[in-house]
Image (cartoon, rainbow, N blue to C red; front, side, top):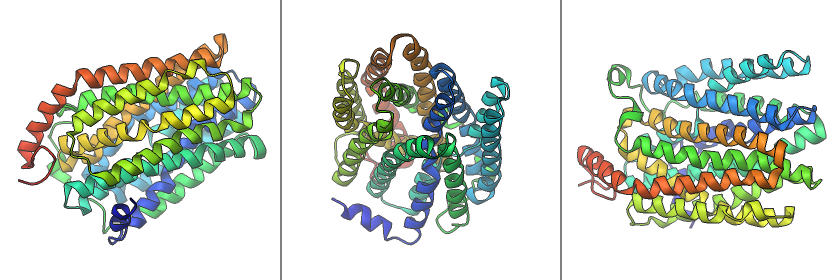
Length: 410
């Protein structure tokens, strides 16, 4: 099962850029949780903590596609140092403002701007894979691998964030995120051999990635999938606190990601011939089905089992969504296209987090898990209703790109 991935990683330069992007992505699973832990451990409510975290995620979603557009136009090595420097500076400012008890509105502003400037390193890695690989099936395997890397990030990040915040210092997870972001960017930016060429003037005047047929529907689906993630994260923090097992928080979140990573690794090695829109619809239905039990769970141990099982439906839905975007959007806008759908995921994450916070404060964690259930059902309904539209959109894009229904050259 691992051979397709090992073959890809043996190609010149691929392991180096994928590893660099992995390091830079670790904050993706640590920073939002780190903010919630940082503020709640200092006595703030879940409503405030979730709102700050959600504001940062929302800012990243709104600004991220524009950052990606400039990366497509001017190249990764030119844009990365500028935006990462700004992001790190503002995140450090946020920590200082909280520690000195500055007005709460300054927390929101500093954290939002800092998050807005963080590039989506998963999109940068996927754009490099699409550049260095010629066979569509290899690109799909590479995208599956990067989705598994995302899940590894969500396995490793939450326990580390919890340990640092609870055992070391309340802002420890945020500090570690800043260090990892800096190291990852420093490792990735100099790797010019695998970098997609700057689109330059070819990038000017074309359609924005969101305007390509099929992309808005995937963004809509990813919004609700992101809401599943956001609500799951903040509600699980509260659930662990209610059952006096706060130290389990990272493990419970990691089990969800572990199940998802195993499923993604398996899917990427199979090379299924089922049409992508059909796969997308099926996996979204599974996400909805496995989410239903969460409001009824009454122990941390059962929650861990349910989270692990539920994770098996998550990675396949993301992998197929990214694979669809890779075929719907032209190569000179691929970083932007991938970032746009990630923005949908991020806005959904922010929404799920911000909606869940007040429900936790008023009714408790178990009730707040209904946000997760409703979000998963909405994702499945949109995916099912939009399957015919995705089929037509894909046919049109494939015709323009000279490939068949499976993405293979004709």
